[in-house]
Image 1 (cartoon, helix red, strand yellow):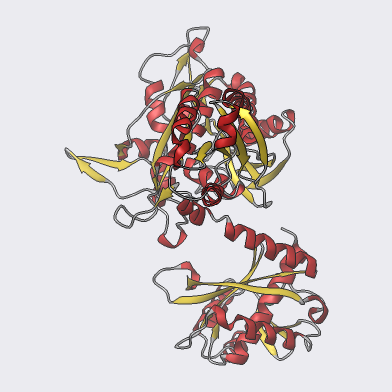
Image 2: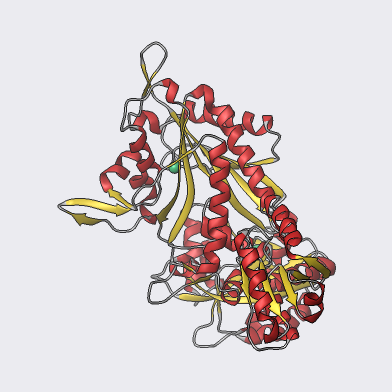
Length: 581
Ligand SMILES: [Zn+2]
Ligand SMILES: [Zn+2]
């Protein structure tokens, strides 16, 4: 991240803390880092209450205080001085002890009358630089993220170098709020989360499932053309299997507790890989069988903390459009190329034209996380970097972001609000074939181990739905829209011709609804516009005069496309659907 911006925002966190103390002198300050898009400060308000309605007075105080903030003045203090300075604040005391244990220097930064324990990273001239800030929201946060600790009040804010940047960001936030997929999911009836079923377990409604199925059908067609074979596997497996793959050791904290069947221990699957491996290894394989591309939209179960669940974005049961390509080392590049092409096509169909790749590599110093074998890791990393370059992908390196079995390409898309989301992932696995003793017979009749490409096209279908809902603000392109056309007869008198038109559309696989409510046309148009249905067909006297299957077309954007014969309109619809436009 841009370190100037980090310094600016972290400095603003100091300013927030100083202003908070003016109103709540007994509040205990803890930590105030900069984060992506802003900063926060975690405060223990004791018995006092702090709410968003206090923001404006605190912001005013911040503007007032900063006028006297000439600079951040650094002082080194010893342990005793530090403890004295932050007496009665057990959080700072804990932080000080942590610094002492690490034998690091204790530094305090003073600006105006306010001093805070801090490692540094501030602006040079707070008085002039800290002007364009805004407090945004409040959340509960456990001290040090540990549920056993006290819940603190986290105050989020942001700060920008210029007013224009701040205004643009706030505008974007407003827009994001309007298109929040949880809100639109309810309004457009796409999914529900029922307390009776459980948190983080979204139920996809008929309309939502049309979107989900459209995505899967689209992917299925991409896969069919690229020689993938679809499989189906159950949602549970013996724990023993995950111990062999290493998931048990590396993935345990997101797996649910095991349960027993006939004295054997089972788990809900956190990943689909082992199931696919066992299909591979169920028969003797020859080099002629490779690459073998097994694929499945497989539902996996992963633990997420309650506080981190967010609509469809973070769930406890997710469907991964998961494929495992078992191949020879010589096939790595061409298989990656195929998958990269699939990803490109899919992003285009989704209208996500702005993306880059994070080349996620191992951090050699983290021996716990990564299967030890530095040479293989290095080789795999270099291979992927070559692939990224050969395929002309824009990329950044993410050191320490690899999965435990190999480096990967993570595709990061930017949505219509320029927000970044991680979607597709292509992971190279040079270890598992050997580890699980998967094999094939080569040209010389000798046994070899295949390597694996783990491929998630969207990654998680639930997450993808959330991203698409927000990207399109619920106004899906025709091929994804749950209802593509709604028919609005002007009055009951026109119900019969409306049904005929509906049948015609239905016959051609257009997802059509007839609104036969006894409402004014204006009311029905408003209703359909709110439901973001791409096209409205209006049938009344004027249309009937022209001929039985004549209709007037209106778009959800309010454009009148005039009168047309319905079969001509169907042709236009089909063209648009086939071209994902
Ligand atoms: Zn600081
Ligand atoms: Zn996998």
